[in-house]
Image 1 (cartoon, rainbow, N blue to C red):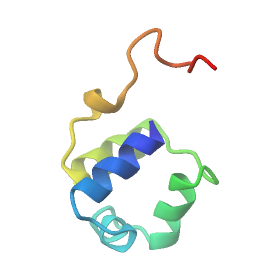
Image 2 (tube, rainbow, N blue to C red; image 1 turned 90 degrees about the horizontal axis):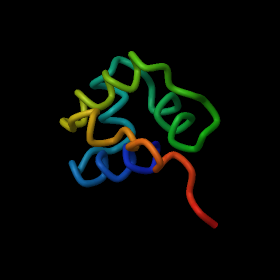
Image 3 (cartoon, rainbow, N blue to C red; image 1 turned 135 degrees about the vertical axis):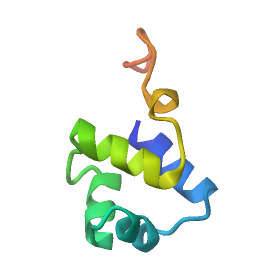
Image 4 (cartoon, one colour; image 1 turned 90 degrees about the vertical axis):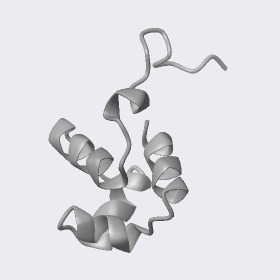
Length: 70
């Protein structure tokens, strides 16, 4: 799901700095959740989706898609 957030941010032409500003956080906050160093809670996820301009529902995996087959 984070990979999809990163892709959406980049597709929107938004830097980590700009996203941080839009959600009243620093760039390091964005970097940490994008690299997996920090987890997002649901409210943060929704806020970030809104800042990027993406529907959160489109980023939530459907049932059965949570685990990748190796």
